[in-house]
Image (cartoon, rainbow, N blue to C red; front, side, top):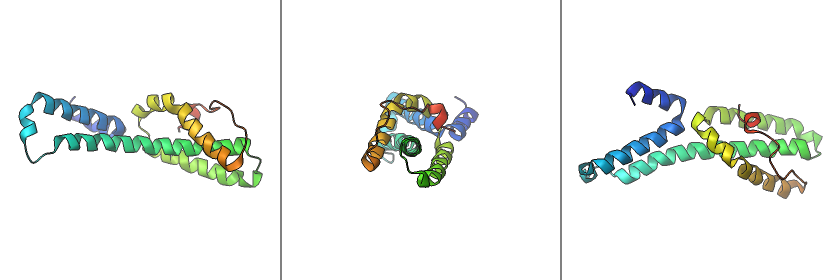
Length: 146
C-alpha cells in the first residue's frame, strides 16, 4: 500500500487504519526479529495500543447506536407523549455522534452485532418502563446510521 492510500485510509476510515497498522507492525516485528531487540520500543504494547484506539472508536459507535435504539423504543412503545420531543432531540444527537465517529469498516461488524446491541437497549427500556418490546430489532442498520 502506498503512502497516499495509507493517508486516505487514515482520513476516511480510521478504524480500518488502526487494524491495518497493527497488523503491519506485527508482521514487521515477526519477520524482522532484530527489531524486537531495539530496547527503546515496546513493540507488543505499541501494537496493542494501536488496536485499542480502533476498539475505542468502535465501542463509542456501539454506545451511541444503543442509546439511539433505546430512545426510538421509548418513542414507539412508551406512552409518554410529553417526553417524545426530548427523546427525538436525543436521537438526533446520537445520530450526529455516530456520523462523526463511524467508519465504513465498522458497518459489517455492527450489522452482525445489531441484535445484541438491540437486546442491551431493550433491557434498559424494560427496566425503566416495564413495557413489552419486540423480541427482534424493528430497525435496520440503514435506518439507524446516517
